[in-house]
Image 1 (cartoon, rainbow, N blue to C red):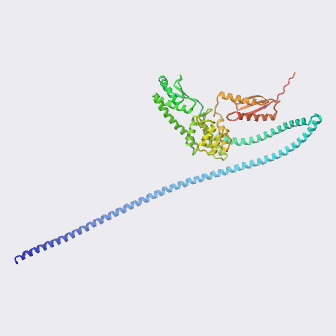
Image 2 (image 1 turned 180 degrees about the vertical axis):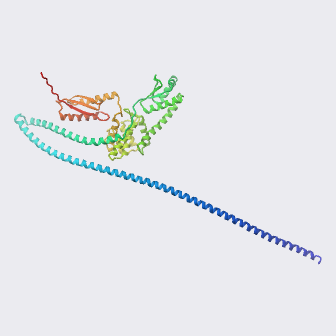
Image 3 (image 1 turned 30 degrees about the vertical axis):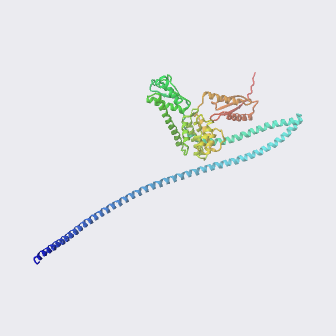
Length: 528
């Protein structure tokens, strides 16, 4: 029992030593891990400080960039604002100048109106004076009639009925003379006042507008690089030329003319398509029915684009907005239409300019006048399937595509087929006449010219008392020689008016025709 005590003690010491060593190791490990943790914490702290410093530097850099960008944007906005302010200031100055000019114009027109008012007052006084004179003459005429009745009954031994008839004849002649004199005075005064203003407006508009015109033709010439191509265009047994004529609707004339072929057709659009297609065939060199069909179809599509572009160019030039695209395409077709040698699209554009200029002179809407002027011949773009005059067809088109009533009426009335319903109808009709009748604008065939001259002379010769009638000045004037025994001086004035009225009713002509009635008395004797 005692022998075993030392070994138990050794075991306890060993265990205690192990525990002591374990505790010591635990303490050492704990101290080392704590020291390592403190070192790591210090490293992390330094890294955090570095990151914080870097973030602060980046934030400062971003702040500086933001401030620079803000200053730049502010500077740009300031410049933009100053530019807009300058433009608005210029616009205000321009509006002020226009307002001042309008005030000056209004003052001038006020002076003109005052002058016209004074003229009207003077005219009214003259009319009152003439009325008094006329009344006195009437009373004197009654006295003369009574005296003449008494003399006729006593001297001529006439019955009351015969005397009344003689009196009525004398009174009718005197009244006709008085009426002719009064009518002449009224016409001269109205013509003087109207011509002054009308000439001023028309001359101002014409001087500011001048356009060129193309000559009317029914043929187009295509030039060939070599006459050898004529045989290829005709093709074997004429199949190429037949295919081309069938697809285009024109006639191709190939003769001995060197280096050229002629394309003939009354439809200018078809003729232009045929010309372009033929030029493409010549340039391509492959001339056979399939290629002809392909190029003709392609050219028709291109022609639609050309027509649309022509209409858009005119609308853009005139500054017209809100017009229906169909009307734009119809306008483009007018580029290939002519009237007496005058290109209809150029004529329509000129009428639009003239109508707008005259509307400005009369303080009317230039936009409405310009719109009505460019559309006044739109009916000429219609095909042959539509019946009626081009004015009626054009008015129907304008109404169908949403144009306002003033434009529709101006289109319908520019040849006086319907009544004028607005001032714009008068302006368009006047501009149409000016554009059509100015020298060089139109031409007519020799047969049509001869026919018009013959009609003028026939109308003038149809009146009683006319000896001879001659059309002179290329049909611009009719010289009427009357028999002096049948027509007196007052009757000559009346005859000129009746001849002019009948010419205006029965004939269509550009411009105006002067009617001059000549009454001549010749006395002949011989000395022997």
